[in-house]
Length: 197
Image (cartoon, rainbow, N blue to C red; front, side):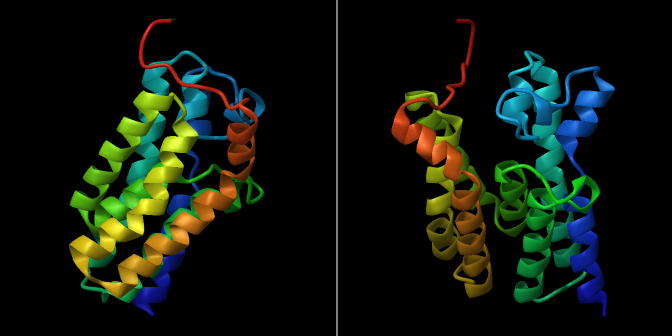
């Protein structure tokens, strides 16, 4: 019963939109109505408020991290921890509070994987930074980090449940970024800037 309760709680926590809440608190436009329309840190960054984007990023990471750490602290088996992590991730993608229309899930996925194994996420961050710095495409960097994450998880933890969780998360990230993939192919994807233009 506790396991199922934690899954529900994880989904409800994951459904909280950091981008929408922080944008409202800081008097910014609704991220769903500007830029890419995605309620995530990258789109909030397009508002020009870097602190809001940073807060959104941290909020999205935390809501993936917290349920996983709680599940591990309570001594749940890896397969249940993996399900709790997936619930938090799916909450971000399909939030009950916002008509099941959420973000793309990169930061929340990072939070989930951080709770599972911090070293794998450190490697993923290096991959993301390297690709993003070289190409200036946040989406491409996220996709490459996502598809390689199951390999990192398996090599470091050797736990099948966590590896399968990472595979499912990567699949959802690819699906949620399908429009970005098409824009990358067309050469119309928006680029990010690491400094002044």
